[in-house]
Image (spheres, rainbow, N blue to C red):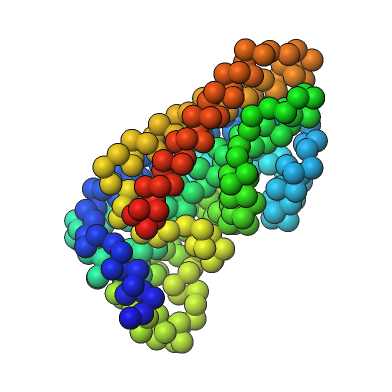
Length: 295
C-alpha cells in the first residue's frame, strides 16, 4: 500500500464544499476579529522599540532573513490583510468547481492545493496569536523578578519548530493576489496518486504541484484538516480557544504597558495566569481529539 493510499484510508469518504466554505469563513472571522486587532495593537506598542528577550530575538531570526529591518508587526499585519484576500480567492475558486462534494479517493492536485492553502492560512493565524502571546510573556518577564505563568514548554517548542514555515507563510500572504491566483489555477486537475505525481514531476518539474513553493509550510500543515474539522465539538472548542487567545493578548498588552510604566498589578497577573491555565487545558483537549482522528 502506498503512503498516499494509507493516508486516504484515514479520511472520511467525502466532504461537502459548503463544509470547506464554512471553514474558510471561520478562518476569516478568526483573523479579522481575533488576530489582526491584537497585532495592530502590538505594532503601535512596539513602534520605535526593540525586543529585549533573547528567546524572542532568536524567533525573529527567520523574519530578518526574509524581511530585513521592516517592523515585524507591521509586516505581519499586512500579511494578515493579505491572508483575508487570499481566503476570498480560495472561496471564488472553490465556487467555480462543478461538484459540491469532494471525494477523497478522487481528489485532484488542484483541489488539494486549494485545501492546503486554506489550511496554511489558518496555521498563519493560529501561529500569529501564539507567537504574540509568547512575545508578551517573555517581554513582561523581563520586568518582574518572580516567574509568571506563560505558554507551556510544548507550545514554545511548537513555535520554534514551525518558525520557518510561519515566515514562509508570511511571504505567501504578501504575494500579489493576481500572481497567487494565476499560480493556483495552473495546478493540474489530475487525480492524486503516487503514479500521477511521478509522471507530472518528471515531465513538468516539482513546481507544477507546488507553484507557491510551500514545501516548508506543507511539513506543518495537514492538507486534509477540513475533512475532519467538522467532527462534533471540534470547531466549538477551536472557536473558544481563539476567543481566549484574543482575551489573553488584550490583557498581556495592558500588562506590558503597566510594567513599562513601572506599575505592578497583582490582580491583572492573577487573571492572566487563570486564562493561560484555561488555554493550556483547552489545547490538551484539542490535541486529544486531533490524535483520535489522525489530524
